[in-house]
Image (tube, rainbow, N blue to C red; front, side, top):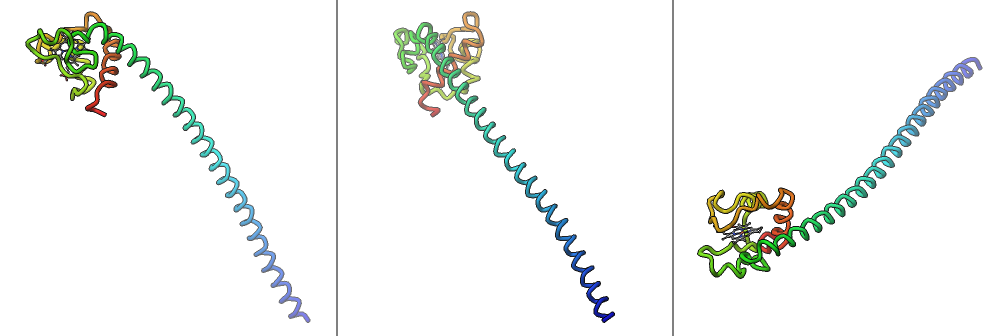
Length: 159
Ligand code: HEC
């Protein structure tokens, strides 16, 4: 009888211990699950916000680019078509009377930076024909940037 009671006590103690461990484990588990959930929810929310602002940024950038291309086009039509031609192929009305053919801007391999440079400083400054005039006195850097964007838009070789 006494042995029985001692056995029972020991059993009880063991089961209480294991019960406690389980309960604690359970609480940690719950906390962990909650933390994971919160982290996941935050990540999802953040990703959504990033995506939204990213899309807005892309849209704004595209609208800005379109406006710049249109401004560049207006300048091009006034100041460049007589030599480079309406489509930029180098067949403008003045081209035939020039000893050097104006570059075909629809297939130009120049980078944007190189184009900006030759437009601003003229052909002679970059080792090309002086028949490509200097435009830096007439146009601001921003206007030259607009021209370069327009030239990129009409370039079929770089697409
Ligand atoms: C008087 C004629 C004339 C006018 C006007 C003119 N260009 Fe030119 N352009 C040239 C000639 C000629 C060349 C080629 C020079 C060479 O090959 O050495 C040239 C070359 C260029 C190039 C180099 C492209 C390449 O791939 O080699 C760019 C860019 C350019 N012109 C842009 C413009 C822009 C933009 C305007 C208007 C703001 C303009 N040009 C107005 C005659 C002209």
